[in-house]
Length: 212
Ligand SMILES: [Zn+2]
Image (cartoon, rainbow, N blue to C red; front, side):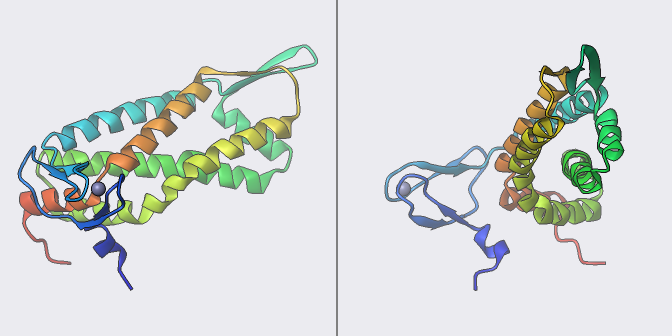
């Protein structure tokens, strides 16, 4: 059995599907496929800054998503604007507790934990402090990574929710767009975060830290 950690050291060429072992390359150097010369990966020295900028943007759009109208619905001539909080109230009123709890985890808890943990990780690595904490965060994020599938989950849940209301005249609010933006940023962050590279940077900054 190949362990997940070892898989992180392997890379498959997108074009010819040759399996390569990742090796340490110098700053701003690029690694190419030995078979077809396609770019495999590069050692991006600005990675921390770029990722930090993405994470900050994502937290702003998540904040907007939580504050503003997600959907406006028109019930018999009465316009009703729903924020995330009121969406939970509506779900509770209709005794949709399971959907409510799933929503709470998928839309609120997971995105906040992932974005906040990523921010802390990048921030402390940037200022080269808190070596032990960043190590724990790296491990936490590696565990949470499979949950990026929640993006697809979330979109299908939203579609289901809109159907659940079964009411005509649904208008999407600012927060809905903010949610979509957050999701896209989240996907981008998860895809571009190279744990292999982060561990290497971590090792360069802090050296080896023993388990406490
Ligand atoms: Zn190739």
